[in-house]
Figure 1 (cartoon, one colour):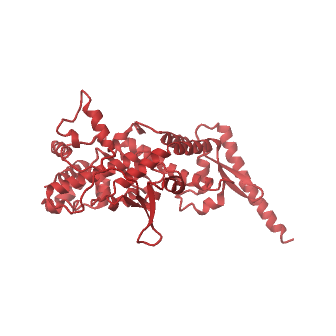
Figure 2 (figure 1 turned 180 degrees about the vertical axis):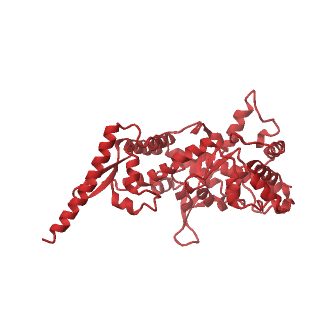
Figure 3 (figure 1 turned 90 degrees about the horizontal axis):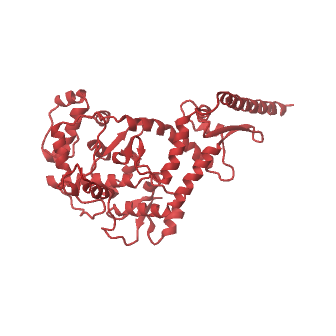
Length: 424
């Protein structure tokens, strides 16, 4: 029986008796060759729901699900540099697409630190713009991204280097451009500006482009983030990893309250000492069928997604987005299952109707241990989101609501008067 399958079965046993009862009703094949590719006879939903929860990450995602809606509206407002505003009617028409359950107006009024509703007499309708505080955060993030362009180039080179063909679809990069800290015009400011490193090629699929690494980058030119941790850990007097495991080990931080059996700990210890090829090492395309090779390839897949998360600004990404790189990275395993199978390395949250994965070792009490300027700017916006209506004087808050309501009603009345006058 494989260590990966054993670890998964152990996880299932500690996550809930209802899953255990389900498993006992069904006989499963325990041979390595079959069980390595078949997760178990639980459904995908049951496996996700049976995971150990981490209250810190869940609380953070409660804020993030509203932050994503705020960012979507902010992008619409900033889309036109000459007139950074958008009509409330336009946002109302997009309410369902933006997941504004109570409508656009109610959502905008919920965040007065970010959005300002005003009436535009010339267009006879209410508009929305960003507050000075929100504009300041936007400028701070843009400046931080522009200042980090050399680092952004390195991130792209690293991602391309993890692909055997040194190529990934451009649409996959578009999926994670914000996570990687790319500027919104990265096709020109990053790719075209570094033509000696990057090249856009036509793909076999119509209207699809591939981003290719054309610069000469040695295979051993990059060191994975986990190797930096190993160097630091081995120098500690109270190092928790022995010398036999250290060359191939990963940092583990389990969710609070998660019960780990002795057998599970033993299998994790065995997995830690297994050799594997790193994310930047070249692996032959030949299919491996031996037990050792399959486990090594699974561990390599873990190292690739670990490195990918390390390259993101906030050490987090939606599972759907990273899945676009799966085949190009040579990963033959279910991405989501990799995250669920290793709860000490990754944390998967399902808040906001999306699956988001965090790199556990990068966080402490819901914040990055080693923040960066882009992250700091985004955290300022998250703070404004978490404030909602707090921090405003009660009288001013009521007046603002009354004034914005009066402006909207006044605009509607004037529009009706104009319409009636046209019949005179």
